[in-house]
Amino acid sequence: MLGQAVELLKKYFGYDTFREGQKEIIENILLKKDVLAIMPTGGGKSICYQIPALMMEGTVIVISPLISLMKDQVDTLQQLGIKAAFINSSLPLGEIRRIMFEAASNNYKLLYVAPERLESENFIDLLKNITITMIAVDEAHCVSQWGHDFRPSYLKIKNLRDISGKKPIVSAFTATATPSVKEDINKLIGLENPFEIITGFDRENLKFEVVKINKKVPYVLNYVEQNKGKSGIVYCLTRKLTDEVCNKLVAAGHKAVKYHAGLSDAERNKNQEDFLFDNVDIIVATNAFGMGIDKLDIRYVIHYNMPKNIESYYQEAGRAGRDREPSECILLYSPSDIVMNNFLIESSGDISSKTNEYAKLRDMTNYCNTDKCLRKHLISYFDDSYNKENCNNCSNCLSEIEKKDITLESQKILSCIYRMGERFGGNVVIDVLRGSNSQRIKSFKFNQLSTYGIMKDYDKETLKEMISYLISDGFINITGDKYPVLNISAQGNAVLRGKKEVYIKKVFNKRTKEDNTSIV
Ligand code: ADP
Image (cartoon, rainbow, N blue to C red; front, side):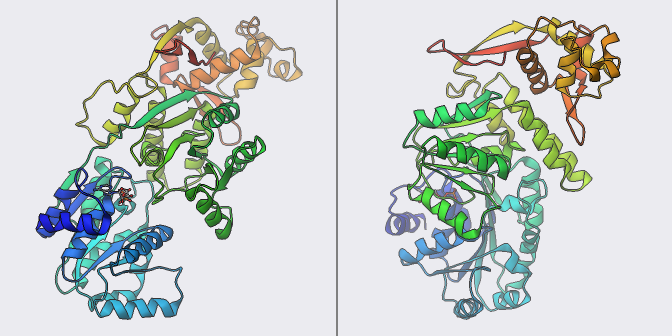
């Protein structure tokens, strides 16, 4: 059986050998077992259901969330001489009818459908007439509310199996699944005693880097200049930032386009094509860009802001280096990223999902603050059996960290925040610490506090950066609906009570001893 699979791999796709996991998955599908496969982006999931489709009598229904991806995949399959079609809302009704008619005559090996199609009774009726051999669920994490792209229509997949006369097998594929998402996939898609496989999450060609930095634009301009002619993605948290960063890159003479949900379909498609076909080097985008993008030679992915969780980060960063050549994934981190993410969480979802989102945000923040191996941190999040300690290909493993004790300064700042009632933002705190004569400070009687003027020898910028550091390392929390308010965290309290010390880390590149990043 597998011999034939290898022949088909060569004949249709031109490859000589299977990649990690592909052989086992295909083998189990051919043995009529359900499958749950967790493979990294670029791992080669599609072939795992396309080859069995060629080997089995009947049609494989592929549930896929992205219209653009579907069209590309079907075009490629048709060019290879494989009978495939897709149905989604981008097609005119007449065309949908034609495809449904063909499908009812069992004329397709693969039929791609958007999950929303499962809400249509007409479509479900059609499926009753087709010999369905397998339901392949792409991006299966979309079934889970704990995942990062919940699509309610995925919940309809479970019933599909019962509709079809002969019980089809179900295979589910995803690049990102924590244990709770995995549990949901099993339960909500209704996998029965599946063969489960997690293939190497480790993408050894990717170098991971976290840069703590407040002034990000100069960093990006410089990085892009140093990497001229290479393909890269710059992810921003909001549409506004996407526009701003893209405009700055273009103004500096770089070939960049933008991509976010605020653009027209036509402009988005054009920009995406320009990037895919190398008419431009850089795409600046929100997280709306990327799922299913099959561009192999992306050399870097810069996150201009910390994303909301590790799943999103690993998936987005993982778009770099799918050709397995060395590539860089850089996350630019500043405390304002926490504020922005808090705001986004606060303005969406119900209470239980918010609690979950906040927990994920904390995990993400811990990634930015750890001084241990970044790769281990990321991979252990998905696969707790990962036990390598030092990858030698992330900014922490490649750096020496020099620590400077700022416990005393931190105690002064924290006690000032405390005495001011934890009701103000950073600028007012700095004014009090530096002993400002402003009317506002006097009207609150802050000039009578014992902390008034105790840091008058420090300039504003240094204090700002120290506060940033205390925020990013979790000594100060930011709250407040309208404007950010500084609060002392449990860790910060420990500093005030003399139970914990604070060190600023200066990071040096081990090889050059060059100062890479510095907060103060
Ligand atoms: P995923 O869906 O897991 O992100 P794809 O199925 O799009 O990944 O595959 C990523 C790339 O890897 C594609 O260009 C595909 O042709 C290629 N690929 C898949 N399987 C193999 C293989 N066995 N050998 C070499 N390349 C492969």
